[in-house]
Length: 131
Image 1 (spheres, rainbow, N blue to C red):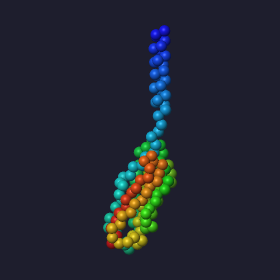
Image 2 (tube, helix red, strand yellow; image 1 turned 30 degrees about the horizontal axis):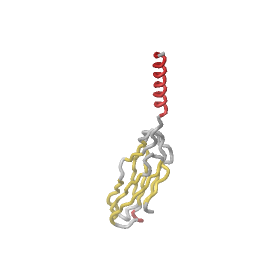
Image 3 (tube, rainbow, N blue to C red; image 1 turned 90 degrees about the vertical axis):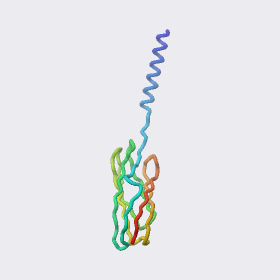
Image 4 (cartoon, rainbow, N blue to C red; image 1 turned 180 degrees about the horizontal axis):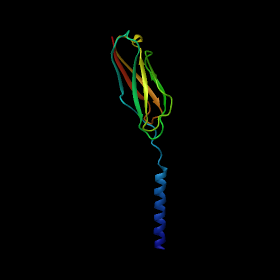
């Protein structure tokens, strides 16, 4: 009888271990940027639109989707692909700054990147000196 109880206990332990291993859920999507600050440097107010690319990586274990990017100034716009970014895959935000629509001097704005990342909204600082 004692041998039967040991076998049942071992069987139960094995089943619980197997259930734990198969029940683990994915951690989710995660977005990591090359930099949290985009610096356009010094640009002339009449120098025309300026472009900068900001790369990011999905460091999670499920696909990532950028759902929206909001800028805090009409002088700045952002383009991005509206597709799934697979785990370990890279993507790019293309930021356009129109200095003709900005005030001369120090330029600091924040853009918000909304996505399916578990960490939530990311805030990227965009800066320049407009001459």
